[in-house]
Length: 134
Image (cartoon, rainbow, N blue to C red):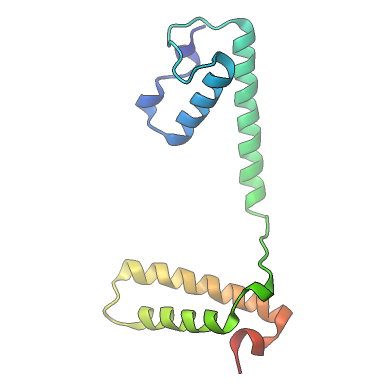
C-alpha cells in the first residue's frame, strides 16, 4: 500500500482540517509533511496511521457529543452589568432603526438574545436589580 492509497492529494481536497490531519500524521509517522505519494508503507506505518486516524475519530466524536452539553461560566463579579445593559440598549436601538439592513439586524438580534439569556441566568443568582437595574 502506498501513501497515496491512504491519503488522496490533500491539495485536491482543499480542506484545512484534512490538511492538518494529513500533515500531522505524515510528520509523526514519516518525519515529513510532504511524503512521496508513491512511497510504499510498511505494515508498522500502516498500523500507526490507522491507529492515529481512529484516535482522531474518537476525539472528534467526543468533542461533538460533549461540547453541546458543556456549560461555561463567567464570574459574576467580572461583568459590568450596568455597562452591559447600556450596550444591549444600543444594539436594540440599532435593530429597531429602519435603516438597518436585514442581515446585520438578524446578527444583532442573535447577540441580543444571547445577552437576554445571560441576564436571565444572572438574575437567578444576583437578583433582578443588579442585573437589570432599578
